Length: 390
Ligand code: FES
Ligand SMILES: [Fe+2]
Image (cartoon, rainbow, N blue to C red; front, side):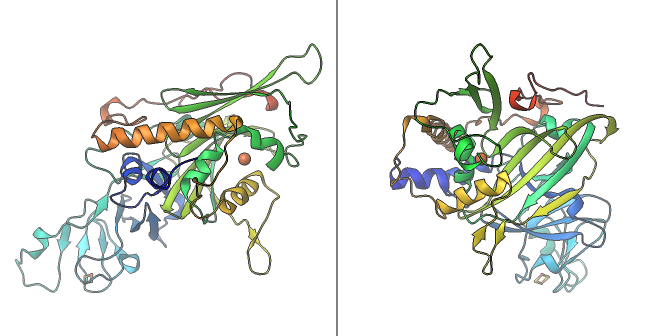
């Protein structure tokens, strides 16, 4: 149980909030790169409570700027791009990806007004078909090259889900809550509900990247071996998971990013990678993207429950727009949730004091690839899968 103040500290992410300051220290995914095309090079993005416009210029560079033009506030989402940046649709002011104003066409020749203008702009980088933005203080840290983004021998594709009407932390608490598997997903996973006295062991091991969640399931028959699965929560808002793709039969490694749109909405974007020695997907390539809707019924106020992800979405949304943690009743089986909150609170304090929070690495010290120790014996993955970079 948390006090109201503690709950606000951990959940609210707008500009100027403690958790908002922490999350702004990390590169956040804002789109799939294949969503921006020559025909549609501009898209509107809302993230961490800020309204922004993401664009691809005609030279192939990316920019992310505040939506409202600093001149007289028209939306840059209706602007046009050229090889230098984006131009406002109203009076034609032009901005580059660093937020500099390059032209103010209606001013007299030689006017210096543009030199005084600095438009809000955030750096963008592409990796694994995902566009990441950095919205924190300079200098930007290294963009982590997680295995799923950097592996090249296999199939990579992105799934983007309808935005959730709930706070981001509900999604992340779910990632350190192994006991829900048997109830929420029991039918789709063909597992019996876990009853009182069921002796499954759950460990939450803090490591360099966040919390490794390890499940040890007792042998199903006498004399059998226990089964292990372990999946890391990559601090602060990503889950690294592996399952098996039903159609291809391949292991589907994925990064599940839960990006706060604002305090009460979250965007889930999943980058998947299925290893296949026959296929080469460069880490800087655009990849296919699929969209999923999970609301159904006449008023779209019911949940589809035919996908594991949708079942989770039902649980997260029905906890409330921002779950009131002053009214919960935790049990001993919720220790992962308690550990995550403790870690989050501690890292918010580190960020507030100007320190480097977990997973924030200076740009020149970033690793070429970060291989994660993901295991899922249930699907036959007994030791971490590694793939050469090329
Ligand atoms: S409002 Fe953008 S140029 Fe005038
Ligand atoms: Fe789940």
